[in-house]
Figure 1: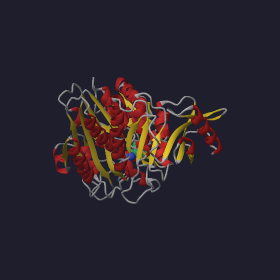
Figure 2: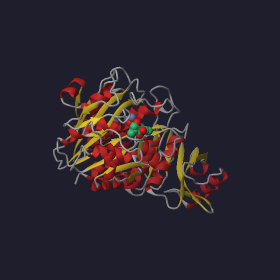
Figure 3: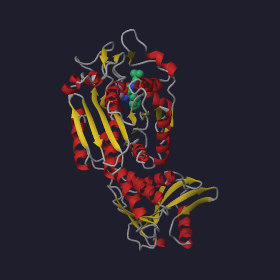
Length: 484
Ligand code: BES
Ligand code: ZN
Ligand code: ZN
């Protein structure tokens, strides 16, 4: 993890490189740097032009830094117009992501209010992420000093600390998603969760397959029974004495989704190692809540199973019973996420939390609707709006989607209370309506992150290839809002 600190703008050069931002304008690139005099800015502008720098997003270039007393000066583009907080976060991340061979960085991006200090620090740390479990990667920037007039002020230190906790949490979620499903199965996921929770002071309880069956968790049992790796339900709890409200977070944790007997096609099946990204986000969020000392009670539920075809697998047409008694006819074993979530939503609701929020790589229809960078949020209106607001503040894109009641008819079956599939059109909404049945009357939101959870394209901004950790910063913001 990169070490980020603060220093006054007058600090003597003590790093390999100086990082400045560049805006794109109709009259060419314009350098935006806090704490540099006009002459230095002008000379850097000339250098940026010589280097062919346009100031586009995700454009990072470097040149000789003599004019400003550094070995190297690095430019990061923020695009057109006045850069937003999120644009600066992305520009900072693009820099640490792509500045190979630079070990230490002095960062002269606009950071004259605590919010900007936090955003720049967060971007730097998110961009410096590397996953090295199975091979070494190009070394990331190891140290960064943000040059800011707020250096030494408590508000800036607090923003820096929060940024570090958030970036660590996002890295935890990314690591879990990137881990091979040969190494991350329900049991090892639960063990890892327990280890991390012990360090952070979060209480953990794990139910194994025997307990799940005995306690009526028919969804987890049905999805997990085709696999040699049995399912788990993990309950996490951060319960500070001052807490007045209780938020329950529920995550889909399918450590590999082959589709089961309704087997997925070979093409793209490898992406289904990311089908536990919701559970990873919940774990990372609860850890962050504890490390931040948030004054809200949080319970986290990780619904962990591996969806595999075998002689013991659930068959299309099997009728199962979710915790609480609702019967479901499984017509497609690839619509498994909603089955494990139903169990976990019921268990979470039994504790009467003030708000329930689930997060899941739930449907291919989500990807069709919104692509790979925008997630969806459904649910009861007020909570849905709260999630959108929390996401906006985090710089994550969550778009509100409806739950049209008429689509419920498509899940009717003569065999059980409900079928696990319905109309193919609006498949994301059908899945949301299925979940709604298990949280009736509660304040609830459902986050479908199927597209943004795994980046199979190129890296951009602070987002690497592979697991993205999407949802963590949104959920932490949501919890912070619940602290009043
Ligand atoms: N895990 C998948 C959804 C998914 C698709 C996540 C693409 C990430 C990227 C989910 O379990 C699934 O297979 N859903 C089916 C449901 C269908 C059978 C009703 C789908 O979306 O095709
Ligand atoms: Zn599936
Ligand atoms: Zn799935």
